[in-house]
Image (tube, rainbow over all chains, first blue to last red; front, side, top):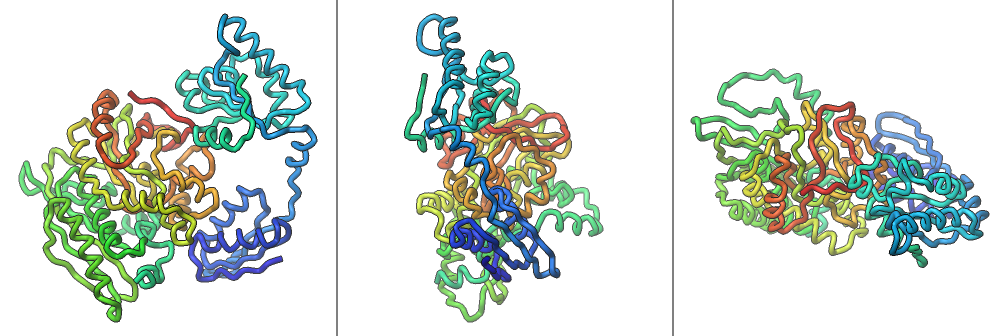
Length: 197
Length: 348
């Protein structure tokens, strides 16, 4: 447990002090911090919520708030992912067809590719859908069942928001999340293995 | 020199130092207002500057703004504070005529610092085509500087901030993230590139954008400062709503990384507390939310313009030195005043 006095500190100093304490505790244990304004409590809460840490705050008086952050929470999701043999490869679906040539064949191939993924021993961490690939996560897609299966196995499914708007598809895809270009660029850059069928 | 510029104003410099909008409006509502038919824009509509009509073709525009330093270099601080104060005249569609210095300075400090601040400010008054006409100074324990500015405008061509037309597109003329970057700079977490871009943005007069947009069918215009993009947009939407697209919004890229590391200001959280419940975020990542609430110092103009004029105005705005964005559009009044969608949308 680390106790921090951040009375008189303005944002973002209380948050920075807690972040340093987290490092010191190796993300295990309890941090207790005292601040002198409610806005600082709210900024600490935002961080704790984003990082999935438990946070309790208590108002001692108008100039003193005690905030307790509990870091000792096992990350269950992390273990699950390891069980399912997910590696850090990223699959990019940039079209509603696989390969050049006949349209009908291309669509059948892509459907079959996504089905095959559900049967693979090692799964990608993320599947990104952009341009006409966005149709695959939308209402009339024939791959929705397979994609939901992959999502349940821990694969992140995400569709480019710009593409959804451009093709006038329903705002929320049937499976997975909506992402922006910043997110897509980061994913592609951070993966050592990008697969484009 | 850096020490006194930083003293006691760690993250509250620039427009982050603004009083919260909630506190302010409840207090202002209690002050009785006198009436003068020639005061055509007063503080009732929370507009950027006051406009007083002299003749059918001529009106005075009045505004003032001052704040503590948010950068170490006193000359640059002077430039930023002046650019910010002059901006309100441009947000109304007016032209700058005269400016008066507003100064708070510690008596026992090196007066060369004050000289640098005032020179920086004067350089921007001259660039604006105005003239420095005087000022007032007070001994205080921390530095504050700004201007009281008078401009002129044709009373029939005032760009009010709360009259956007449904269907108009929204354009923002400077990148967001200024508050996050200047705060991160104080704890050595911002790169020189980002700091330079933030300073370039804060010292760029809104004059150039204003001169372009006057030529178009603009239904509403304001400048984005302490209340952040969402705070100022909310002020704009009296009887309408707006939809924004994250990929269309210009911002300093590193601000996203800094917000991800929770290098965020108290001002941003105050803005979230004030307008947060009027905003619906659809799959918007947390750091982007923070950028949208981030208090801006000397931010860009935000205006609503006729959709059919997008190709021409885009062309002209491309000649400006800073990135701009067609960030979304004005819609009929909805449950949420502002809807922010992940992804982008093409306007052409």
